[in-house]
Length: 105
Length: 341
Image 1 (cartoon, rainbow over the protein chains, first blue to last red):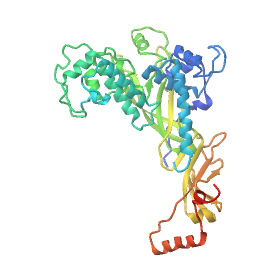
Image 2: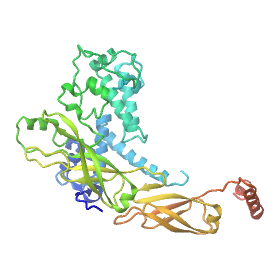
Image 3: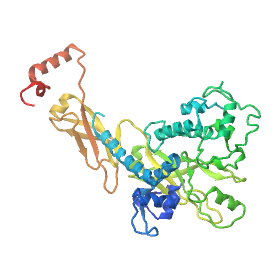
Image 4: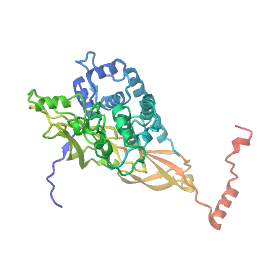
């Protein structure tokens, strides 16, 4: 077998190994700090820490905030609407997983 | 190039009012939005809707589009007539960056970025996409004009489809991306790029892999952005994945379920021998602990038994069913008619 010299990049699994600050999450998700602050005020995203400077977001927040940003941009949904949409999407995902689990689907 | 019938896409008559255009778009956009829709073609439909709306909501673009006439069919071969846009001044106006992602060749030729400095050419959903929030097109243009503050590169996002077995063992994959870069004139163009990536063992669908420094290049010594790869599992009929747990249906003959059996069961990680206990009923779930997706707490593999009846398609098969009837005196509907509920 030919020896391969290709270097393969190693990444981090965001949901398991990464924590974001406000600035980092905005960069990674494309949301603005104003948007994200409004969503946090609605409880749609829940960071640890009390002030924006101390806020730390779990890796799982990335997917949530990206979804929020797309919905806000594409459908012009305001912050309370985003909070509701994210909660409903969570619930739908739980139900879909449950119906996949039940036999004889 | 193919003609696009934007009225057909939005399900509207040619005479639709601006209010009707907006309403039709909003209704369909909610239905097909990729974050909401489960329809397989949701993403393509959503893109189509966005393109149609981009033209029909804009009075100038709509007028120019209408002037092409109504003799065209959706998907018909089409060349724009010379000077078709004479007298219109819509070029680029109102095109939001990143909104007209991957629009059709038809849109690009008619309303696309020829006069807009390429600003409308950014993509959002396919390939690596620039997101706002980091360096914007304006920042980049400032930089080209000589403003020398360091600007970090943009974080990019892309989707990667892997096989379930890759999550069991880890894998090394070469993936092709379309990276948005600026050309010599400051236009955003998509450049193909191949990346060799290690898929870590234990990764799950929907998770993101962050590759530091593999996003957009920084300017004026700013650091490069990161690249986020969203992992998805390739659809396959046999296994269902829920978090780290994996399940599959295993068909059983009635006598195997009744008497017990040793069966060979495929897992994403090779086959295993499984003992099915006597007296199993259809729908019984057997757990193979730790045989799901690996991790600090590995998932489990669930085997769901489904009993399959052999067809009564020969004399001996019919005789066997007859013998069962004699042997059992079994009424599966006893609780419909019997004394006790």
